[in-house]
Image 1 (cartoon, rainbow, N blue to C red):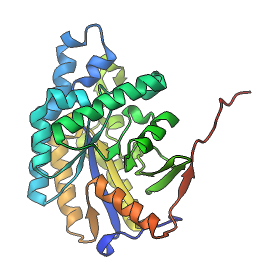
Image 2 (image 1 turned 135 degrees about the horizontal axis):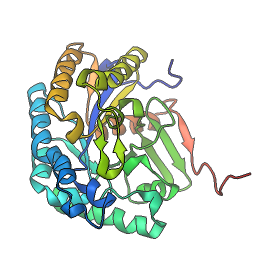
Image 3 (image 1 turned 60 degrees about the horizontal axis):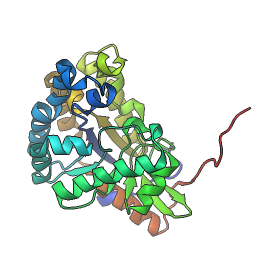
Image 4 (image 1 turned 120 degrees about the horizontal axis):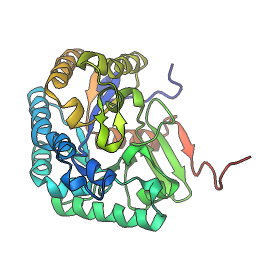
Length: 294
């Protein structure tokens, strides 16, 4: 079912990661720049993530012995330094996720570079190191973003969708590991009901909303692939939903042949496999050098 399977460490059948995008209340400010500061419903909906959900998630990870990945906009890291400290103290990864959840496609390349580097500076100041991984807001990567990630020495991106499992992206300037996302394991469609930023999804029951993510896991497990959740603390970190996730995690971990790791470790393994000559999928970029039209 998978054309270019990857051998996982210690004979694991499947590599897995739960990645959380801690957007917090950056969403209301970027969507409503004139009055977002006074829209308290939207602010509190976002604040729930770092203040309530993340401690709950970290406690589950501690109990189950998991190290995982979080992505935070630089502005959110500045607003919630205690969340940054808690994640790092517990041994988890924090990846680059823009500065204020700005969409790269809405900016010129020079504007992209300014905000990208501003967020990187926040990472260096608050974590003591540069991030190794990146996820674009709304998955909106441009060729300029890819070029910048390679130029800034990033190990991986996790925003694109060209395969079921990790692959390599190559340009004339270098290469980058891609840890592909997929809307089937994103919690936005089943749970995001956020009128202030233009999303009015029909909210599903916890078990129903998570079914798609769990079904994707079973398919990847059977195929020996890669499963990654793209979740948000203010959505899946809610009490009833997280209880479902906890029980699912407990069940999956009893299999004994599933490798849960931070995305940085998975990407490093993929890069090592590529370097030793494994038959990984390679995407050559740019895809196009000019607009396509009739």
